[in-house]
Image (cartoon, rainbow, N blue to C red; front, side, top):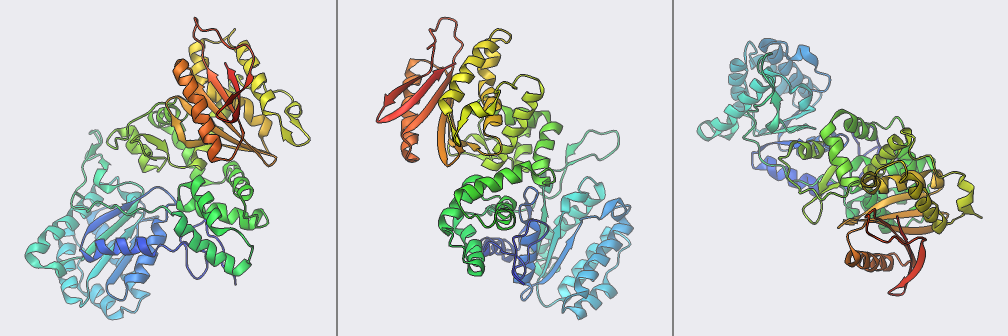
Length: 519
């Protein structure tokens, strides 16, 4: 049976095409060898469980590896101290049952007392000191039961045993503890009593800082494509495809696998730039995709998160990367943002950007402010998109909009309104994304693919004549990087004392033709 790209659950090297993560595993192994206690806290579908499974297989010849999960543990697991200790004992016994460590399992069952955390602690010391190899504890989905004082007491017990190692020796407790979950248990907000506000109160301050990059880089993605190509001989340019997938996903593990799976199953193995773009369109439209569904759900649920996303994507605000700001910390927890090269917040990847743009465009459309592109056919002739006509008609629209909306709103929302105008025209055939490297100084480059042609539209906020000239310089330079001879410059300006260019016009700059429109 041939392998497949897996997008559900943990990956298995025998069944699934997988990225070679041996370098990442080696880095994590260093933490374990040093005896560190730490948390792998990453967003949903970031490969945490797969990483834990691979660590289990990699380390079982040197450690007694106890791998359990709090997935589905439920409130009963944490009903009281005795119940928790007993369930914890059963969980470890079940793991040891299906391994070669039968004698260790028998010792565990016969020696561990579970009437209290204190008894459990003493029993753990006795057990670990009788085992010839170091004992490694790994708990997956640890934050599923984190809003619980008993869970904190359990972490406190592990911390105390960690601190006692200097007196009792390394073999007096777990050599290393690895927790995995979305939220960092060092920063849990726990309600200690029903009448109290939630407070930061986690005893996991002994944890080492986990600095391993869990994203997939092009040289890692290509290892998965090599394996696939050996089976199917599609003739794909593996280096190009790996870099393109990375460009759109920033290496988010689930998105990498999902794009590959769609190309393989739904697009007749079209391993090309167009195939990747078509896969992203399918992915973004999939109502059952939980990762992208959660992204927009979080926008609806957390007003500060929504404001951060709109400020970054639509209002061109340069927000300093500061993880201790609650809204930024929340966005980082969701892996929705990252730090750019200039020390500012940016959306984590182009797939997330596209989903959020579509979300904001749809919301704006529901307000009745954007159903103005009209008959799509007038913009497309013989399969070719007439971009100058699109921009000219948009300029006319905005002139009409000024009669019923204030200029400040139109300038602030201008780029969103342009996307609202453009999307119905290219929908189903075209593809667009915002080039993240050019979003600064009031500038946003929109790259549109349609019918085999590529269009670059620079959307700018008017900030004076000097910046207008710089806009042409920047656009011309960007066109060179994409081997294009023509580009489009749309500037939003509603200054009362400025004479606005009446009609869009073609201008020459540094050997490039630029279609310029001032709104």
